[in-house]
Structures are given as structure tokens and as C-alpha cells.
Length: 231
Image (cartoon, rainbow, N blue to C red; front, side):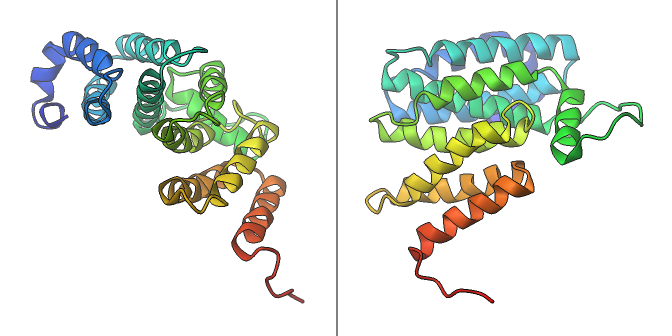
């Protein structure tokens, strides 16, 4: 990561070998190694993001395929955790890309449609790929491993923010319910903290109707339904 930030030209020359090594490290049995690999992947993706779109598209697809491959049924907790971290870094790299200019005009579709249009203008991830990320990650919501659940809580808001049209409000409703359930777990402060952050990010990606329902649910969790009634 430090080399990517301070010597991007040097990393670019060897980025293929570096990325391959980092992707292997993302499945290491030791959590500190996986987390360090995630930071290194962030730097590599930053370097890749500055290059031509065709090459960037190729590597984004390569990284995504590696991550989705680690989220198959029966995957070990180490592999699943590394794959969720990989998808989070990929989404962050994609969101950092400046949107390509688009022609003005067109039919209106609300804030979600506008956000989706802006996301599509960036490329190279599609709504279908974002939906695949969501569905693959969502399957791990009740995993027994704490690190897997924590990584999922960090990933879901990123998917919602990156492509609100790809993961519609009906699909985000159970995500909101999952976040609220996590907020009720007194023995998991680290998970609760991640759920609070995710709660805000998911709410920002919803339309007003679902956002109101989300806020009401949070109010019930925080105050237990005992808050003062407002006029």
C-alpha cells in the first residue's frame, strides 16, 4: 500500500505479479495478514484505476471473480472473510473513479435513477455485477465467524451506495432488518458499531418511504418503544 501511494509507477510495472500475490494473501489463515493484504490491494486498485478503462475493466473483473469464488457454499471462514474484504476494496476503488461525462437530458427517474446513471457512467462494474456481489455476500449474514459478520456489515452499505438501482428497496429492507437485529446484540459492541455506520449508509441509499421505516425501526431499537410521543 505504501509503495502504491508513493511510487505508483514502480508498482504499475509489476502490478500483475503484486496483485496475484495479494489475492493469495487475502485467503491466508491469519486475520492480520488478510487485513494487511486488503490495504495492499487498495493501493494496487488505486494504481489500476488511473490506467486505461479496458485494462481497468479486466482487472476489476479478475478481482471480483476471485472474491466471488471465495463466497461459494462451504467456503472456509478465512476464505469468506478475505473475499468480503476484497469486494469492499473493489467497491471503494470503483466509487473513487470519476464519472464519465454523459449527455444531458433524458427521462427523469428520481434520485435512485440519477445515482444509478452516475454509477453506470463510471464503469466498468454493472448493475448485474453489483447484484451478484450483494447476493453472494448476503448468504453469509448469519455466519458463525465474527470477522465474517463484521466484514459483511462493512460491505453491504458499500453495495447499496454504489448501485441503488442494482439493489432495490425491497432487497435492502431485509438488510435494514439485519442491521437492526445486530444493534440489539449487547454482547457484540464491535458488530453494533459497524451496524450503526451501515444503518446510516443503507438509509441514504433508500427512497423516502423506506428511509422513514428504517428510522422508525432504529427508534424502537434505541428507545425500546418507550420514547415520548410527539404532537
